[in-house]
Image (tube, rainbow, N blue to C red; front, side, top):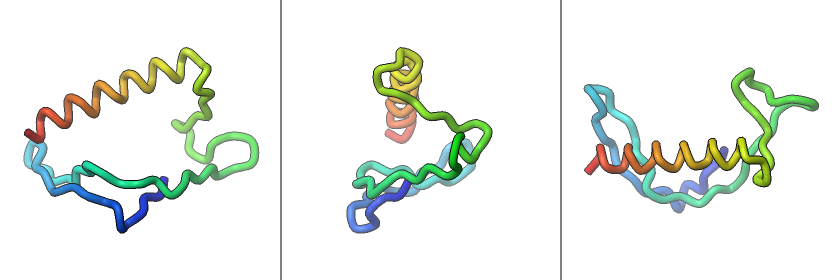
Length: 73
């Protein structure tokens, strides 16, 4: 995933003694798919937005982001 550096906004936050940069805004420039037949990394997957599995994963990710946002507050 590549973000447009001119659109990135956020700040550093401490999570249990570990500092992370928390992105609050950024425009995506592109996604890279490495490999010819399957994702490059063993934990990577290709999804179709029509697939129920994708929708479930997206919903879980959205909940996780919401929980992280609350922690930062």
